[in-house]
Length: 344
Image (cartoon, rainbow, N blue to C red; front, side, top):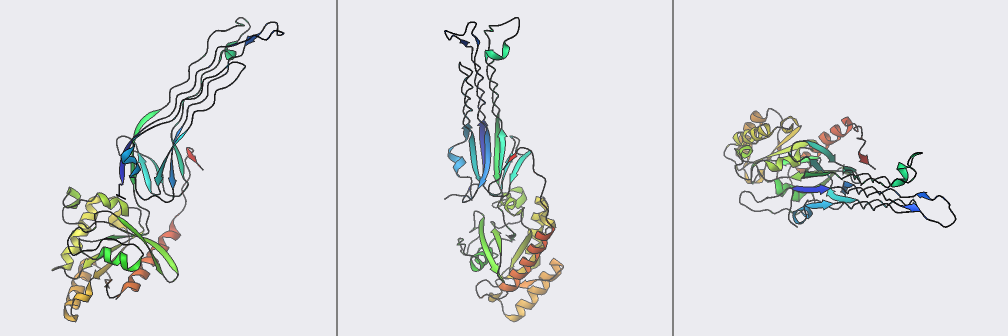
């Protein structure tokens, strides 16, 4: 299934049903009177986060969603039924933006979260509402109110605890395949990874989710290579694992290139806790290891792990370092106040 993380959708809630003009005509009720019922309310448009989805591909084939109109009122004081609602089912981690693609409407981060995007129009009053002492037989009723219509953007940002960053061929997909059950594409050419991937890693009977994104190159924030659009999928992560390939001529330059792209992208990525590892060290001899490790430590300004996903060297140490950062971040998080339009 093709990965799609952004979609433009048109939605419209249902119009309210019209009120009815009707009069009682029973044989034994002497004066009768108005008995026109009210129209039903139009259907609402909701968005709901559901389990089992990891892409917005469904919205490539259908971009228009309209709720049903409320049923018109009827005689004998019968109120019309409410129009059927429409629910847009999306993966967990989906954000909904207004048409400008900048104004956030809601952010669905848990399974079952539901938000009303457009409310249906109210039904019109039947003629029974207009009866007065001086107008005993009103022959008017209200039409239903129109529904709301709008164009929205759905933008998926994967939910993960740790994010993998680095230049192409830094060993990110190999690491993900080694520590999780994910099966990303692995090859010896740049940009093997074209779409983000997720996997669940386990260490010391504890689990956390890792997100892998396509590699960054210098100028990615300006659209060079695949660009930086997939960086949005690691905005929610609690820690970054920055992999620098041991096959790089200058690991320090490679590290600074990726850091520069993270800072240019913004959105707090450059401020996240970072675990740095020199990957693919199984390809180096001891002298080269020592030299490149020292250069990377100076560039990173902190500890650097030696890692080989192929041989397994350093894998557990890296996972434990990531798990420590993830647990520290989990302890600091506090639940936010719910908006009144959220529906549980």
